Length: 92
View (tube, rainbow, N blue to C red):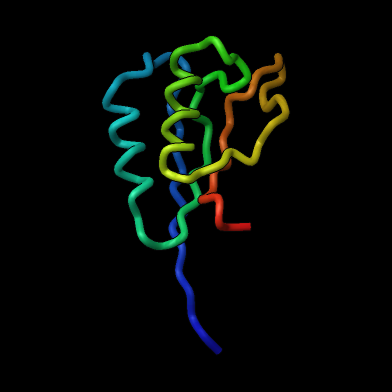
């Protein structure tokens, strides 16, 4: 039987913290791993808000590195898409 490996990156960014450039820089570093990588967690970036600069930047970053977010329904009791499960587009 063959072996395989993957990386699961679990992120929690409190909503009380401002989204900084270093958050996106660190996320860029994660997307460069060669093993299959899953980015999951509560990023507290409102992905359902197309006009939000942080949402736009996060979406653009994921797309630029070939990732797709798999969650498309509200994940917060008051609504809003705050949680992310992102995988490389060539992964199921």
